Image (tube, rainbow, N blue to C red; front, side):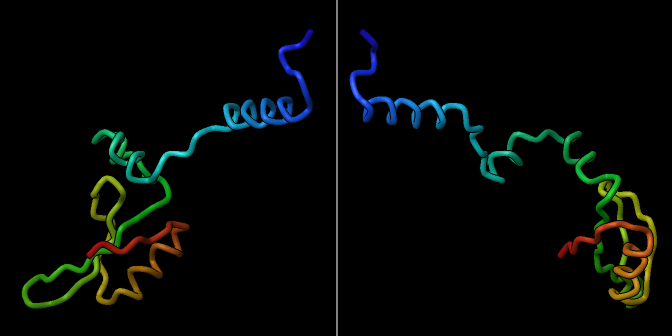
Length: 96
């Protein structure tokens, strides 16, 4: 005789197996907390740039920075910095 005695037991067993086979999703905070410093430096390095407001000698500029912190360019307006990122097929992120 089978370990499964009726249809309801079979359905419950199938559901349980499906739940076990489904990959578990981690929260963003769990994923980020498990990343090391090198992981953060490589995160988005080829596609993401950061736009940051910089005040130099009483002038406000907007810097475009690579994911690793490398200063790529400075612009007089935020729109210009964002435009430069888009022109180079990069995704700009804002840093406050």
